[in-house]
Length: 553
Image (cartoon, rainbow, N blue to C red; front, side, top):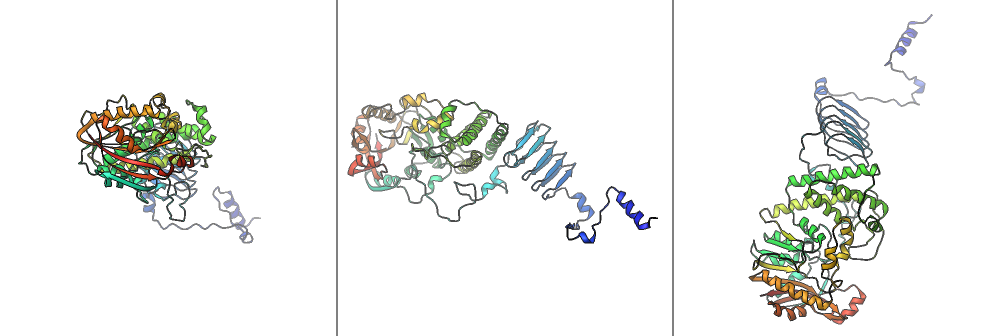
């Protein structure tokens, strides 16, 4: 016959939620989890709709809630919600939502949504959002990873040393001997000398997009400070737009021209200032492209592109695929403004992810970036550009936008006659860069036409030194017609080789300027270091000089 205790044990065992007691002998084998008693009152528990979830937590909410979830969390929300999810998180939302996660995501979207996916995350959205909300700029979020200092070349923490590693750039060549004469000779010499440890190169948008042969920003900055605000400043060979940007910062009306479509693209972005609303639109477009890239990469979608076999030679396969998906996503954007900005950001990274060791070198070296690096750098460079364009807007709130042409100088109608107060330019002279050759990789990626550059660029490819002299004379005649009576022109020229002999840019200008109605009234010259041994020998003891020449009518 069973005792009362045995009957009680059988009844307890039959209950579905029965608690199993662990014998004392097994206590050393099985750990006991002790649950901490909650200190919250029932009223607090009922009203607490904002909460933080821990790892492996499950949450259920039939109303509206704002919350932050932990790693490996699962969330269920049948109302409107905003949330940030952690790694390996799963989200279900039957209302309107905006959310942010990490990379390598799988998602399903049957409505209109803007989102960033988390690592190995799955997303489902059933309803279409009928109202677009302003996209918060990423650097204003407390959790933004870019608020942390990070070395330019790594994705890890910054190096322990605070030593600044100076990069050799076209705008920061070392000057040796110098000389000057005439009107503004000393001022022009100051403009030609590159200050040591100068960081002005990176003010506002100056640092956006590499461009070979550009001015140091201090050169036009020093020259333009003597002109009253509102003066008309012109650069007929603007390149990346350094003169135009400095002119805007001095509150001038700026005009520029360049035959290269790459120069046109870069100058427009450097001289563009935007509102926070428009910056939000660009960032929203970036997120759209980012999600498209993740989707199509996961589904292993193919991408068709002109010149694809030619482009493939310049990039490792894994980076080449990433670049293809990014440019495909950018060009599928509907808005022209956002598309143009993101194309320019993409262009700034093309050489970085190629086998070329620099913009101007023919030597190659395979890049060592990890998978996913293109997206990482696209995010970083987009944020950097938007922040600098917002900063530019604060500095030039009432300045007129830049006027930019993309034409051959020989056919350019250009500004009105007698309207230009100051021209600062570096005309192409024999021995300078062949920009079609330097930018061919970018032009193929961006599908820019090359015919105009191929036939019209003023280089050794199209003109002999004798022919170049005639082109120079015609250009100076047109420039005189555009220049106001009291206007001035600053020409930036280097020396070059003709039939193996050194030709001084200053002496050449003095010889031909009088015949086209110009007079050299002052000049400054500095000797530049020559790194190529063959060129060093060709230029001889005189060396290679760089000249800034002032002309008046």
